[in-house]
Image (tube, rainbow, N blue to C red; front, top):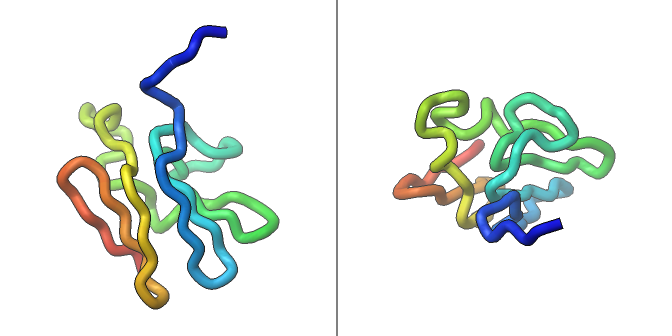
Amino acid sequence: PRYNPYGPFISGLAVAGHDLYIGGWFGAVDGKAGTRGIARWDGSEWSAVGSGLPGEGSVNEARQRVSALAVLGTDLYTAFGRVVCKWN
């Protein structure tokens, strides 16, 4: 297979409590709705983070990929494009 420098890829990992979060440029994880670009692993299955990235399903969807993840206390922050989101 040929190498594709544009994806899919994981660009960030973060742990909050017992959950692992991944962010990057990828489609739905394990076929779960709302997991495009960001997902949570609880030790047994993948799930969406909130309702997913803003703009999912929009014309600008292809431009949205998580470039960084960070945890402060119990809050998860993501950066994508020029947007920073706080998830709670």
